[in-house]
Length: 288
Ligand SMILES: NC(=O)c1ccc[n+]([C@@H]2O[C@H](COP(=O)([O-])OP(=O)(O)OC[C@H]3O[C@@H](n4cnc5c(N)ncnc54)[C@H](OP(=O)(O)O)[C@@H]3O)[C@@H](O)[C@H]2O)c1
Image (cartoon, rainbow, N blue to C red):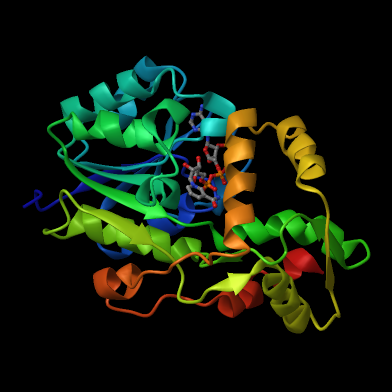
């Protein structure tokens, strides 16, 4: 059992998932600390009641005030901008203070695509496994928010040009991923679990764009482009080349072998996973 007055630190707090984690933890009566970079322009995404702690995951010592006296950590690691060099030292500091951790990992680990040498989620899982922390791995599929990557093309003409429109995924609503993590950090019985966290439906990328079109009342279309063109753009946009290659290979596979969903969200949270249509309705203005 965690102590009565629990305190949880949320990393990547102002991203796609962190604000959901913060507000759901507050609803549970947990004291919430958000780790934010000095000058973070997205602090307004955090709900009232969250305590801000300035710190940089690239500088482990800067996390000392944020971690002092915490019980749990919702741990997300921004690989693209950070690499993994400081992850072991950050985890060591977490282990010194907290008793629990919920790590946002990836479906890539779950299905064996991602390995420790990729210096990605598999590496973080391996590091975390070596600690004494009560740990839960949230092996998530793609976020529904990834569809925001199409917003520019949808606003400017309505033709989405991207590779593998037939790739079928089971994207998860960020609030549902957060909800599974919140249960792991506040209830007993989740230590040692590696949950596959997905949305409720399998749907192709083309279908995803069609649903956005339905919701905003416009006819949108998809045009497949060669993977190489997308790879060049991804790498130019900051993706590590090996990660871009892995993602594109995975999408190619998903055109013939659809991603398999799970019932984790419903089982762990007690409520059905949100659909992509619900997500699109909530975010419609971002596509208009
Ligand atoms: N997208 C997917 O489909 C998917 C699938 C599987 C797993 N994941 C996991 O999800 C993570 C991304 O989550 P997200 O989409 O919520 O994040 P995000 O929207 O990309 O936001 C990243 C967050 O991390 C903060 N941050 C960046 N560098 C930092 C640093 N050096 N120190 C402290 N904070 C820092 C950012 O702050 P600023 O706003 O100040 O930059 C921001 O709050 C990935 O790294 C991956 O592990 C994603």
